Length: 126
Image 1 (cartoon, rainbow, N blue to C red):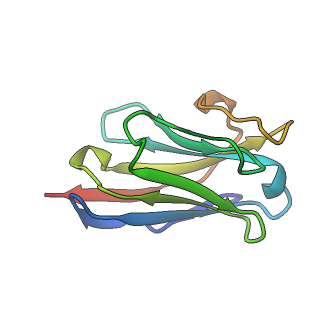
Image 2 (cartoon, rainbow, N blue to C red):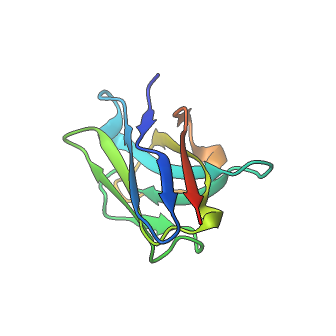
Image 3 (spheres, helix red, strand yellow):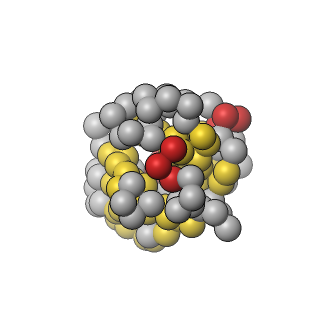
């Protein structure tokens, strides 16, 4: 398994949680990293992405201002800090990666991503 997500769990509305994804040591520094989520009965949707340099970041409108994506290339790890969690944030969260040709390259398109982790479940309760 090249990508390993962790840190999911149960949290109350308004709470915070940080999930992590360990990437491939061989490719991480040239990988664009993204987080996607999939709620039961729904399609997988984009959450956030970060360029291989870390300089370019995109968020879905639904999480903008609440979630923060970051990466530590020395640790081959990407993080998603989730604050002010809402019931509708409940989902399985997946990290994904693809080779970034340029340091600033980034994508919200899940079909662009070549490698996927197994998912970590985040449950927000009232």
